[in-house]
Length: 388
Ligand SMILES: Cc1ncc(COP(=O)(O)O)c(C=O)c1O
Image (tube, rainbow, N blue to C red; front, side, top):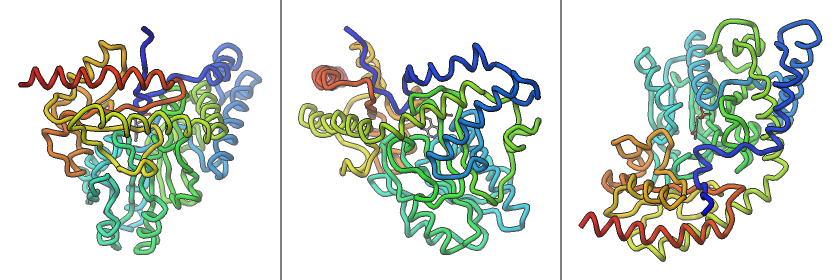
């Protein structure tokens, strides 16, 4: 039986059209983009047109787009870059983020605390939405950076980023607002003007593009300093010989995601809604995590917890049934701690251990969902009977 891949939030299979666009960057245009001779200039042109394409899709100018080594690097560079630049301008040292960010953000902010910054981790409600009153209360004259993710990777919650930005800037116009749009890209409108943000992170591999490449949008005149030092690439904002194929792949993947936005999201929504509505009917004691209203979560995200089962055992049994699934963040799989996202949403740590995330994508069909709906009830009831 063919395997069923239901972990598109962890990564997506590269689109053949993306691979096709990338291939010539290895076979023909392999020159160093910083070289002045023809081979270099061909590679430079490929980067320039990729940057122009990404900028157009985001509704920004090409010089506001910096290519990076992925979502994690974009998040690190955004937060550290703004925090230090703001501190150098004597604007303060207070950073605000949410309790349910990806570790790329949380661990960066925790490290900044060790380096003398002050941090506030905003609480969220049971659906995972950031407490806006807590944000308003937290922003003060010393606040320099606010970083809240556009969509959560575990439970799919969409955050009101435009409102978050408005609240933060109304209390302190000097605040720099960053959003991690790694999961949101391709699922919602992430144009910086729509969201009202100064910094925004995107990663290629969540969009049917390559791994190890991303972009950071840096709004013109935002206080920011680079994370990676060396050569003068990316206008001295990200040193290192560019990943030309990756950059071309990222731009192509973004273009396809924007062009096919409606069809992809409609396809995901139909499959995901079947999981949301049919799984709890087939498996007693299934607790849906994240927003109950499907329109308030990523179109491809289903997440739940099963009472009286160990989440990891469900994943192993699904893998044996040829279904690739996750317990939430790819990074927390295998960890003994329950997910920080679920516990921040008030879910009991015991229940949080039994979490399952199924994220659908372009390659999935209704038959895939039939099979999951078929095998999962048996798996959960077998594990429950073993647990006694
Ligand atoms: C919300 C979010 N931010 C950041 C990242 C990290 O991106 P990358 O894997 O490209 O470093 C991920 C990946 O799982 C993510 O889901």
